Length: 446
Image 1: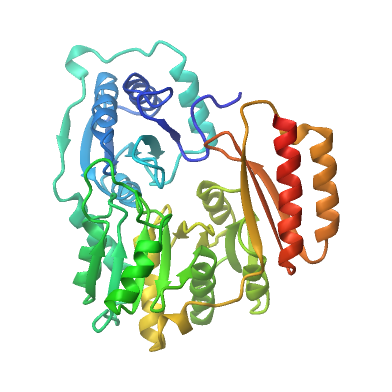
Image 2: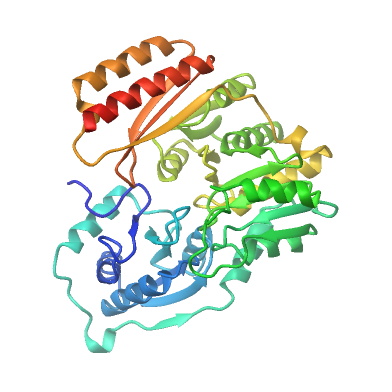
């Protein structure tokens, strides 16, 4: 069965347009609630959201759907995605929901679902919910309608959990840290956690107004963080995205440290301490070839998955890995969290910085990445990747890069875009390969 609603990270789209409407959100609450009604106990779902204006609409619609089928609802308000995963498990909920479109602009929103174990739903669970979305769902008897309540200390619970991931023998005293919360879900918790651990905190992106989430700030727009780190004379900067499940770091010189460098640092440190499990780390096909070479030189393996942190996590669970992530900044450290957690990953980076006693520019840049170029080709419809001319150009490019680079071409899971990425030792060759493939795709899609 093909997916109609769920993409690589839940349901996502422009609000008040299909599928991200209040009507569908209520139906999702009814369908997901029905799917997780198991046993005779009083069933419970926990709901968090980021700071988008549409979060109120989507949240109320979901509450209506869940309570209509007999589920009690606990509402957290603005809180990071990993906090929902954590609290769904610790509060013995049957289901967790995060209302967020992650790094997208404010006018988009999304619905992410977590099972009672705190992990994102499997493909099978999502497909079963999709089936229910196409059916008439029985409503609870009047006496069995669910109740809804808000929990005011959810952020405090999450801060405590995040701090427990930081080594007990370390403090952040003496470090001046700029934290950019993208005017999103972590605008209160991330600065508080860093301050409680002793850091001098310069917080930016902490004034959400419903429409400024990810707007010129956060992990997808790091220029503000880079400028602030340099102007404030800070030791390091960390940027989260709108729902705080991804992380980008900036050193004291204002240079970016992406997810590949962060994974290299954490995996190498875990390996030295004897705590790295699975024999290596899990990343996606988009991670730089330089990361693979760096790890190989230290006897650390690298397993690649298709793009999407859910697929990284699936492989981690299958193979017993405890470090994984994406170049874009999703970091999954399964010793501490069941999903990507930008704040937890940031604390591991800061722990390494404290232990090294060296500037961030020396500690955080683990390897020199090979030239890599990614371009997106938007198309209106059809399947341009199946066109014979496109296949021919791709085959030629793969032959040219054999032994010196890689080629990754994939449709986006969230928008009508084909992503073309190439990397290799020669920058001119990489650029030429990507341009040729993009031109062929554009022609086929015309």
